[in-house]
Amino acid sequence: MASSRRARLRGPPDGGWGWMIVAGCFLVTICTRAVTRCISIFFVEFQAYFGQDYARTAWIHSIVDCATMLCGLGFALCYSPAIAMVGKYFNKRKALAYGIAMSGSGIGTFILAPVVQLLIEQFSWRGALLILGGFVLNLCVCGALMRPISLKEDCRTAPEFLEQNYVPETEKQDFKRTSICPPLIKLWPHECLCYCSWKEYDFLLMPGFMVLAVSILFMAYGCSPLFVYLVPYALSVGVSHHQAAFLMSILGVIDIIGNITFGWLTDRRCLKKHRYFCYLFAVGMDGLCCLFLPVLQSFPLLVPFSFTFGYFDGAYVTLIPVMTADVVGTSLLSSALGVVYFLHAIPYLVSPPVAGWLVDTTGSYTASFLLCGFSMIFSSALLCFARLAKKIKRTHLRPLTGNMGLKQHIWTNGAIAYSVTAELDQRDGEFLAVDTNSFSNR
Image 1 (spheres, one colour):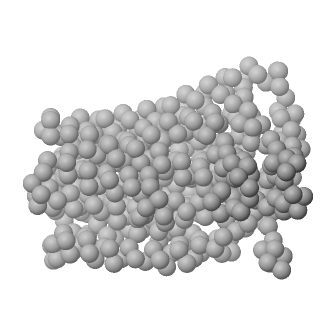
Image 2 (cartoon, helix red, strand yellow; image 1 turned 90 degrees about the vertical axis):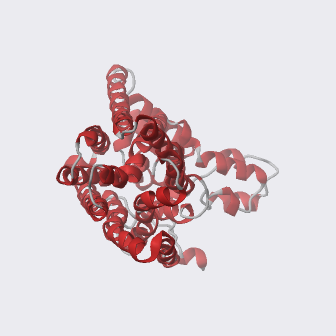
Image 3 (cartoon, one colour; image 1 turned 180 degrees about the vertical axis):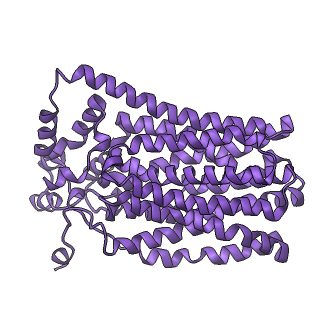
């Protein structure tokens, strides 16, 4: 009865309850990422109250961001699962769905930045934190919207396990009909759990994912300090407290436009296969913005910066889950996103204190912002050179191996689909543009 009611879908529904998932993820990003960004407004208050330098005060923000991405604690228990659920419900309109869901970060920043400044003035920073804590309790409502979904592409067999003589025949038949899920929720023998655990993370050996992972390390290092030091930098050049908070609001609302418009544009047929280059372009543009920031020393000049940086920040943030899904496939998106956000944790932890140390040492924000800018530009350049190298290699290997043979092998031999997919990505670089569902639907 239960199995008949919860039949596996051939592919993501691209609608229906999926829009409720998007709404839930939207609220999650408001309660997590937007609240975290607003800690920048608390920076000056913390520094004045505790009497510490920039480097030590920056640890407050960096530990919050790191804990969200690194542990299974706090915001991490809500943020990563919510993002992964959107990818399970959408395929054709995945970029648009992620654009709407991730825009919660921008909307939340736009609304919360002036509100937090007002709360600090009325109730001090302690009272403001208590009120934000009550607001974050709305995450419980968001969790109630997350309805699980079963897709046919999640069902993969394990031939090595099924060949073992000591496994009862009834368990073999059951295992053939069961998807490979995280090992902690399976009641199979130890050998099966080991196989499931390994297959869930074999994407770590894919060359495309390795390049993406290294690029994300540099990108995360470059983007984190700006959200910590934009308000203190604005105050240091003579901008008032309310104007500095307004800069964060501008960044937040333009972030929304970047989320939705870039998500919609990269879902169009003309740009869908060029998502890779759209992502690296957005990251590179944010890097350029950071390089020019030290010469912008008045409120009228900082406003265009907030517009530009906010737009491209929203653009590439939207494409991170989409890029990850294009590399590893939808069925492994949850595990892959966990690794991707884990990689964010390391630079999120060290980059704000390093930037603060540079401010303390040099007496200026210039070195910190230049380091951030070059880090993001290197992240973009790395992806660009990796793609060019794959194109060149494909040109040389095309006479030796036909693409049709590889595609037939993937369709007919599901047991080794992931190893063949990795080889396809290594040889011709086209897997990033292949729709994962085509493997399960054809």
